Length: 317
Image (cartoon, rainbow, N blue to C red; front, top):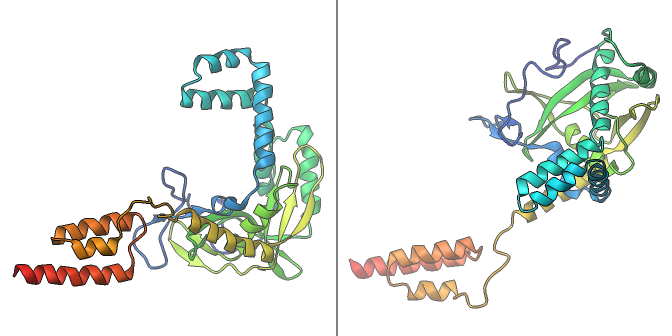
């Protein structure tokens, strides 16, 4: 084991927990200094291009199965059909009744057990059904030298932060590696984007607020696919150069989603005419507020307003 900066065997991935805001966003001190500010989670940032159709349909099926198994939930839905919060809770209960979260819980536990394996530590009691999974993981990753586990990184240009599973060395080069215990059939785009963000990031220590280079390959990354309960583990190369191209598209999409002033009413007055007719400086301020809120204010209007203000102030002198 050869853990790089900000890793320690006692707490692989960093010396302290990452502080987060109430929405779960990591708080990071920008390179320019000052207080910590929220960075977008990597998975959230790249998720705007994700096709969630198949996931949504699966969730809907699980709710249907859960309701079929729990008539009491069907009765509760009828009693609370106008209560949004209660209905959300009943949907969660139906998902749980269908055991929709069981596979996720198993996958999370299996994922966690790979850490002591990579650290060379002795595992505790592992159910027989999952010992074959861990042995398959050990065999598949024997060619990879783990140099970092659960490392927290930041991409300051985009104000994005996240934790990647592993940094590994293979044939003399270091790569980002990600462990997936569920299906990867529909997730290639998001995975490629996510790992490309990590590859372009730098290490960040939440305790010291220091940054350190993360010198990994930016063309390819590795997915370690360990489907829970199947006793097999496979390695896949991921084209993160293509993923990085998609991240640029995601950046444009996110910028577009924050655009304002795309709708204007037919009968709105022309701000230039309003400025010319303004009788007081206060009226000019009100015109600016309305036009700016609608995204209609321009540099030309700024100049017109300044000229009219000078005329009004001069006229009252």
